[in-house]
Length: 246
Image (cartoon, rainbow, N blue to C red; front, side):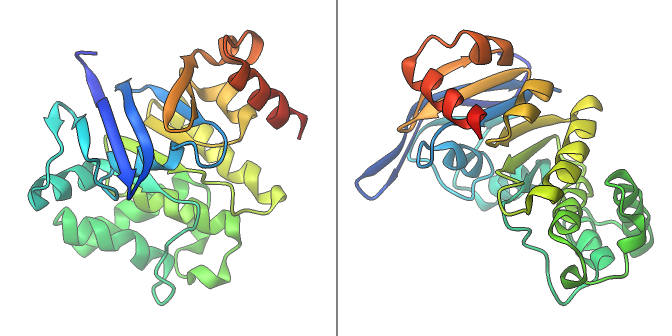
């Protein structure tokens, strides 16, 4: 894909003897929303962690905006400033206020003044519907609010692409929808997104492309309606039937 924002070609990752990713390839265009699903241990989270260089792949090529990821610390720093990541756990600094959590990155990595960083932070807190939480500390917020702060923190860096690694799996059921609603709005605004999730309702509503993985490989890939209504592989059919029953 010539205009790919993110491109993985023949990517392999090992943890010791365990082959976590096997010749994995994926191209993601600007504004495209890709949902990666599959059973536990299939390599889904490893894909997004390699894109953000939290994990180093040992073979194959990963490019962001046409620039290949290398071991060069400057390359990694540049990629991380362009690629936002939202984790299962919120990873907020507990001793800082919400506003301080959001301004840290733009001030240190983007060189914004405190005034400009705070203005940007308040804008994105509005964007995730919690502008009134700016002066609280993370422990004073619900799980759903903390995850929305984490999304706002990523948005404050104004990344080219946002990665989500099972962003609702640590939340109580009643808080899941408030986070998914924000993600749907981001998708509708044209944010390039790669989402690892078991939330198939979200996938059906938002994804341009779905990737079903098992044992470190792409088993099946296509439009959500294709995977949900007529998956080609028995593994994909079985996985979706099990997950849609819950």
